Length: 636
Image 1 (cartoon, rainbow, N blue to C red):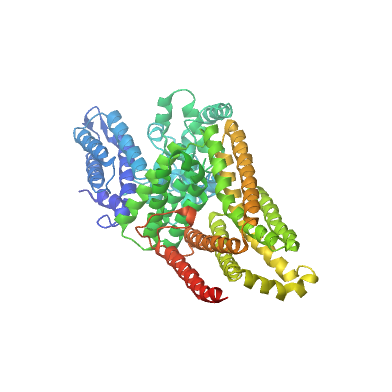
Image 2 (image 1 turned 45 degrees about the vertical axis):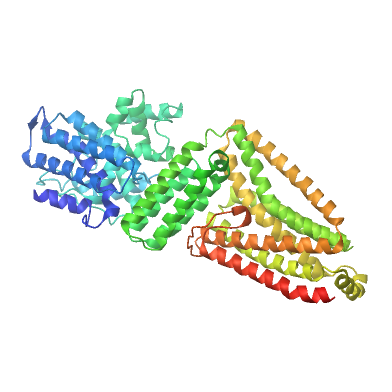
């Protein structure tokens, strides 16, 4: 094996023997090298440079062996067959066209099957890249990128001429990014891994612009402004991985548009088009951080991928494929746990690939551009009913209690609490959509803490109601409070009622605001009216439900009313406790120990040890408290 081969492989995949995490990226890098360099050394069945050709044989064989060692994947067998054919073509000194096309095809297949990160996190800053190029690259490659810099004299081989039409035509910005990151063995081109990822991407886009002229870019800008090429280049990933020759093959203005977008990447932007797009991109960033040894960052990115991406698409997906929703949640949690637990590389890569595959399925099942009006209406209705039901039950029980006990002075406090929650919810909508971004972790921490506080308050109120469930005890309580009642409803009691009402409502409003923001973005013009109809219908249903609960609960006998109310609040306390633990786990604030147990989110039951233990403890406290209070109640 030539020394250059050893050097390049050491640059491409440090520690190949045990670095399974690097394997898909290594395959992509090798294939990129073959697709670009093979045409320069083999022509019409003749080898133009024996040493260079030997490297192409070695690289194609190495790519085949690495694909065979990739984690299990439904596409791996087809990729391996293609790699076998590529190696055969290279050894047979086949024409460059089929070799380059096949290498690029395998490269795209590996990128898709193993979710290799091939796009910058944000639009590259080409102004900063120009300064970096002048400082670090122009000495060899020249100010104009023609390979004629002052330090190029005597270098063998000569520095790359970025204006060479033949090579530039076969090179993507992603390929340039790899070269900048890893260097080129046997040459003066060293790797620039000391630069940040964003800086390397900016240099790659800056260098890719040398091969096009201003006339071509101007034509591309005009076509892009007319709306052409939006389907071909929907995001930076498409711009980064497309070569000029591929764009030329697409016909029309695709090559000119590519030239323009390489020089003006901000025209595309890196913002994901949907919550699921965000999840996919963020999980890829998480894996890259893990590969670099930044475990804490990898875990936080994995948490963000769920909370700030997939969770916001759950409402729509629940209506179209609830089973896919459940599997995707579980798989994303498995990846987070693998990162947090420091799992072996093979296990983490497998978990990542599984999560990405399911997210792509979810994206196909629920495209942001194709949300039907019926799906928008159903999703909107489900959100408002699901989020409002628990709050309605708490408010109805409290309102009925105040009316039943003739403490009408407390009703204004109750109404003040839930009205304040709704007003703050409106403020939350404005702030989160226009002023600041409320992160998924912030949302879940707020929901989790509020749910646990609410559980404690409801548990206390439930025990208090149960202690007054007999007519004798209630009469004694009323007599003891009669003197205080003359002076009106106390401030302390009023604030307590207002606080419980506020917590019960704002917890649901806060979550509802974020869900409706995501649903509104997913809905097209035709579906948004259906979303509004679903919201109005759901809100009306909640009002009717609240009226029915209050009206009929007031008519219940005193002991039955107090007993039923106490039971309802105790159940809600257990539900809120489970939901609070789950929210804090999703925010990454509490560990997760998965169990083989059925999930019932409506009851706050999630298959993990921490949440179930807390709920079991609360049930034990409730039962023990009921038994302790049962004896005195019977004697009374």
